[in-house]
Image 1 (cartoon, rainbow, N blue to C red):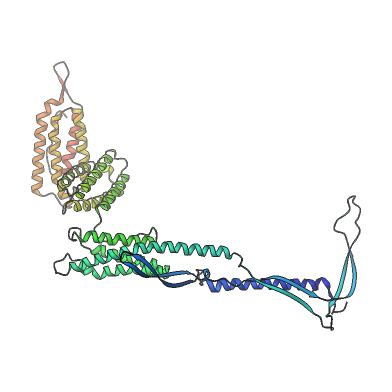
Image 2: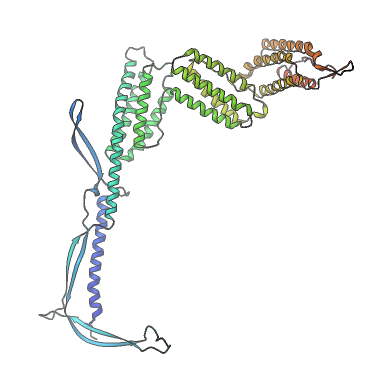
Length: 517
């Protein structure tokens, strides 16, 4: 066969293949156009920003407001996607040769006999024109604009993004205006505070407050202009600025009373704006917390403290009493009932003193001590807010020596039940008073003074006097004219020796109930 002769199947296939390749090339061009035109290098949709004016009805009459909008660029255009809708292939073939090829059949016949050979006709020819000898292949095609494959889904996603953004934008606008009003009022109050020269000292932070206002304003503008990547940085700047103010702002007793609600409104409206821009984000504040916040902090500290000492059964009830005292104090403070606040403080102090007596060496551990410290600091803040310049009773032991004394006092109280001698309560009272005298020195990390030690020694003498007075009552009659000592007396003497030995290191005498030991 001459080199000019081509199999007819190849001639037809080449024409069809040209149509398919043309279709694929057009599709690739459309995808590249969408990628280059509609998206940034990082894959985000390119924005299209514009502004328009809208007239709104207000109480003051029609007002013209400029509205800024940002939409994805691809939502405004229809990418050109060309499709070959119809192709007519025209060619004239001049058959040059024909042949028949034979080969084995694809399958055998049913009875297993060999199948007849398969024959395939083969044609060879060339394309000719009707008028001359030039080879001609004509493909007449019809083009049509079609939707890009998946463009409907892309449009849905972009429309949803625009709709969601509009919803958030309206929410931001609704919250931004109250913030602007609150910021203006608060900043004016701070500015006026220093006008007479006799203010509370907050005027020096005027510039910082302006910066806080501008930070929120810039965040709102960034969202409006389609630049959300700036918002986290501005939010971090807000938190940093607030933390700096928190360290330097005046305390609740110095801050002017009319300024407090203005500050809280300023912070609350700012938090609403930030939560519209960054839902769930932590928003820092500054200045004294509200009573509600203080009460919540106290309750959280109580819960953490209780979890640190789960084996101290009596503690839970006492902690619940502390929570109740704080809650009642906050309620009385809300209604400006200062006498009721003082009464709740007295109950709190009584309960705290009882808790302090519950600490023994076995119940002390680093975790429980850390939680005690947290609760004490929170309690001080709460009661300082309720009763200015007041420090509540500290329920922490000063050291392990005090905890050891507590354990001995607890044992003496338990032995009172076995001895059935109510008169010994006075002796226990003298011992507890002696412990209270030594606490201040222990808390300060100092030695007990000679004057304090003289008072402790006198209380030991009073203790001994009580023991001498009640000793005859500790013997039980045998019914034969004799008597025996109450078995609990020896235990009492042992714990009394240990207790006074913790308090007085010098030589001393502790009178015993059982003098026959």
